[in-house]
Every structure is written in structure tokens, then in C-alpha cells.
Length: 296
Image 1 (tube, one colour):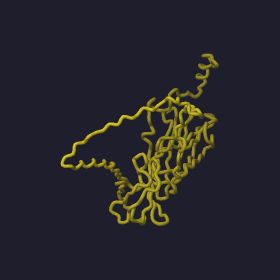
Image 2 (cartoon, one colour):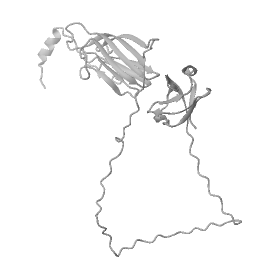
Image 3 (tube, one colour):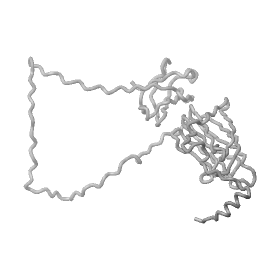
Image 4 (cartoon, one colour):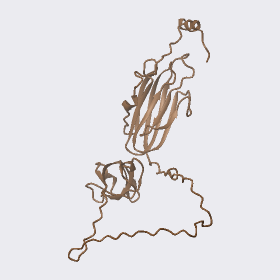
């Protein structure tokens, strides 16, 4: 560590140098601004636009925006950035990151990750997103920074990502097995113990044996959900349902669209949050948003 004489620090302050904030850029050390993210509204063209101002010293270090996707597709995020004036910070860079519905980072563009460092226009492509709530995070990286920005977001509906298996990552390794000799080393005098047979006498009344107990019926699985995605495919309409394996749904389960004739289906593929199926119903018949029942 290099020590700076106190006289130099006092002299720098006397010269009117910029004061560096000593806080974390938020009103509170326990602030959770992502829980109050501003929801972006898409227009008929699937576009949204918002502007804002950031200032680390004024406790406005970051801006959070929420994207609520009701169907799978691609998202393009573009930011037009107006950095602070000349001489404030030659290495200014406004960080941008996107988080999935589980608050896991999808992509990040800042001084330490990704590309486009220091650029006043940044573009982030988020491809084949599943339905859910996503977060866009813009943040200052230097305590002296301020910035104005205009954020453009474009959504284009498309295909959901193919279901991926994590096999064999979830298969446990076998423990060390004992060594078994090639030749049988059992002593010739060894005799295995004879099993003890327990005989139970059941009294019979009237010469008839009582009927065996009936096996318990398996518990019925019944889920109610809604349609969050519609697309025309060969042979009918593909629907995306807001139930996945985390809710008890699974590929192969039968279901039906309530109140619509011919709305029976079998789940084709499921991930943690959604399932898809094909029904022999036109897309127009599903625009009313009918409820869906899955299971028995």
C-alpha cells in the first residue's frame, strides 16, 4: 500500500478537485431497487422506449427495468448514452446486464465483461427467451460518474429454446467397490443357515376365505393453468402453458382446454416453467384466453 502525506490530500482539496462520494450510490446500504423495477410497456410493434438520468453522488447509481414476456422470442436492448463532461472521467463506461426470471445473469456489458467498453451506444441481443419476467440493469461503475441515457427494447416472437438434458451430470458416482477374488474362498465346511418358515393360520368362517384388501388408488394429479403462447403449426395450433416440471407437469400428461370442443391434447415437452402441446383448434378460438386443465 502507498501512503499519501496528509499535506498533499489537504492541498488537493484546497485546489477544488472533485469530491469522491464515500457511499455505495444507494440511499440505504440495504436497498433492493430491483424489487421496484419499472415495467416496460411494448407497443403494437413490440417496441419500448424509456430515458433516465444517473448520478452516483446523488444516490442514483442504477436503473432497473422489467420485461414481462408472455410468449417465447428474441429481445434486442439498445442504449444511447450521454457520458459526463470532458475531464471528469476519461474511462467512463455505463454497465448493462440482463437477468432471467430466476435472477441469474444472462449477459453483461461493462468494464470487466463482454465487449463495447467505453462506447456511447451499446447493443445486447438476448435470443430465444422463454416466457417470464426479465430484468435490465443499467449502472455506473465509478463514484464520480453521472450519465443520461435512452433505452430502446425490441421484442420479436419466436421459438422457445429446445429442452436440454443435464444427463449424466446428475448421476452420482459409484462408491469404491470391494475387491472380489477370482476363486471362491468360502470354507468347504461352511453351511448356510436354514431359513425359518413362519406359518400363520387364519381362521375361516363358513368355509370362505376373506377377500384380499383392495390396493390404494394412486393420488390423482390435476393442474389448472392458462395459455401464454399461441403459434400455428402443421396439424393445428401449438400452445405454451404456464406450468412446468416445477409445478408437477410432465411430458405425456393429458389435458384439455375448458369449454372448447376438440381441445384435448397431450403434453409434448416441458421445462421447469412451461409445457407445450398441439391442439386441433384454430388460433382464433384461443384468443379469449380459456382456462386449461392438465391431468386426471
